[in-house]
Length: 227
Ligand SMILES: *[C@@H]1O[C@H](CO)[C@@H](O)[C@H](O)[C@H]1NC(C)=O
Ligand SMILES: *[C@@H]1O[C@H](CO)[C@@H](O)[C@H](O)[C@H]1NC(C)=O
Ligand SMILES: *[C@@H]1O[C@H](CO)[C@@H](O)[C@H](O)[C@H]1NC(C)=O
Image (cartoon, rainbow, N blue to C red; front, side, top):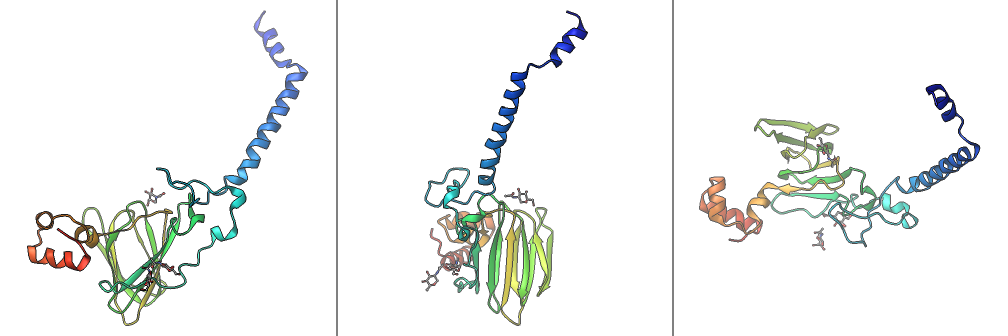
């Protein structure tokens, strides 16, 4: 058989395989189109066990509109005596509809003189909006350059992923701030808690921070640490 006949033959596809191809195409279209609706979202199933990758998806038939609505940010959380502030988060652990969407929010309230102490979100960048009051906000880059600015109502500022940052109420009224994150579970690590609210031995803290013993003991007492 020469080349031209073999090409000609390959074009003469018999009738029944064409039909089968159509059926296959239709079948795969049906298969891919009906579960496509299920892939629109993966509402966290708080009842199922959580794997390494996070929450499992709630069965689509059990998903309701309230999975996509969270009303827990309509009031401030409890104020801390130490920082005179409160952070009320709507991360995926509180708000199941966020699961898998790479988004979350938080509400920050600062009384007069209040601060959100130095902290970081290991897995997420943040954008912060001031809706009441005035604050000094800032972050420190990984080569220790400080970026700080006084923000007033309506200003927004971004805090790049993982960097240490803070907010301080600069008065003269309480401040209300709203943050959003590009993660449904951004994490929140407060530096003073990392150092002083656990059982890391004081001698080690003194060594690694260059603080003196009295100051370490004072801060351990303040933040509830031991050792
Ligand atoms: C956030 O506010 C809600 C009330 O809307 C409350 O149930 C929740 O405990 C608060 N969270 C924190 C961390 O204070
Ligand atoms: C806030 O304080 C109230 C009253 O002391 C307490 O019942 C509640 O559990 C606290 N909420 C949080 C999130 O700590
Ligand atoms: C959020 O954005 C940063 C870049 O700013 C990226 O490195 C990070 O992976 C993102 N986080 C998630 C959970 O997608």
